[in-house]
Image (tube, rainbow, N blue to C red; front, top):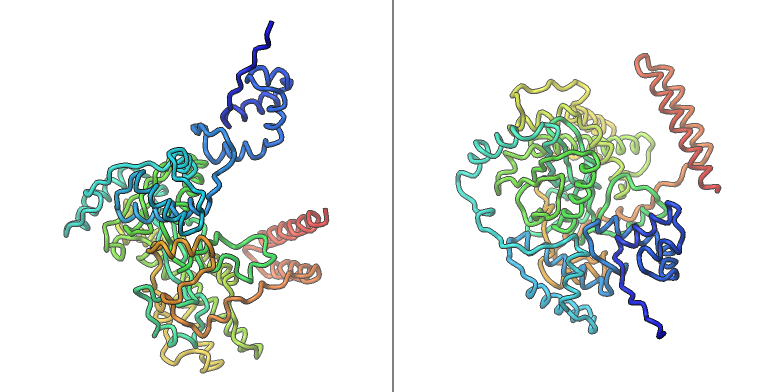
Length: 511
């Protein structure tokens, strides 16, 4: 009797993961191979690639029909076409598959990928790899602007929002620019710089302040130009999320990535939230969100309607500037040069400043924007007055060394130096997109202002504390707790927990 050759079929990643789960339940290799109709050597390959299979399943979801692990051999082309695609849809430009494949061929030619074919198969797989991109007819109604947009928001959109969502599930996010190296004696130089039409100081970063109507604050997010700043060397844990972009801008791609991660965060909490953002090219409509509903403010109304612009960002900057002035006072007291602030130090201080912004400040700014079920403001504590403390520190520094502070510099003018810098945009040309793909540290000098204080950007990371320094620090905190009548026990407990964590870290490093 002639042998019948068994017909083999490729199994999907989902089926492969199910087979691996069967093995974990105790089924033998022979039983599992028979169940899925594959030879035992194929099953052994699946076991070998278990981590990659599970990672792919987690990334692409249970609806994916993908059978192979590879993510395409033309990563640069796919990054370029995705960046271009996001920029176009954020501008409400209709794009279909034919246009996109033609554009992919042009990027392939520019990148020197002569073997690339924009086939239907590649296009289908690229869509799946790019979080299920879909093509829909763009309605002009969504971007129509009338003189009554603000009135429509206040009379229709806002009441509906408050009716359908609890205040703790209404969030607002807004970008801000920060001259993070700006010392009180450098303000004239920076204030003369143009911060519009693409002219940006090289000592700036873009941050995102995001919080809810009940005062909950989301983690800080920072964007800067360099992919791997020198001060990040040997650092294993950054103070907050950091992304690089050639102009230090929020772009459609970065915004999409950030919102998708937040969507997973809220899904894990089983929360459905409204996310209010301004209407700009860097904030595209995002497909596939399950727990975030993006709501866009009417164009050119954010200064009135957006809660973060009602005082939250000003409070954040006041806390940050207070820290900078305090560093200057410390330098003068110790007869040392003025501080050079690296992006790492700026991120640490920015996170600390964001934590210092009070819950009451955030709630009152939402109330000021009309996002509240009561008009009564919450009284803020006297110790939450960053503008008052910043003014006091500026006066103190001026008394110690008049040269360290510009003569007529006030707290308000200090924190307002960077209020008009450009923080959002998109890569406008194919050349910019390709340059960013090939060299993440690419800088377009035509769109930058040379800055004499930019030399501090490559400051090295702070040295790792020695064991003796750590012991002294913990002992100092414990001693300080003895003089606290209200929080002494809590300070001691936290100090002991911190000391235990550092000991565990040391033991892990020795393994």
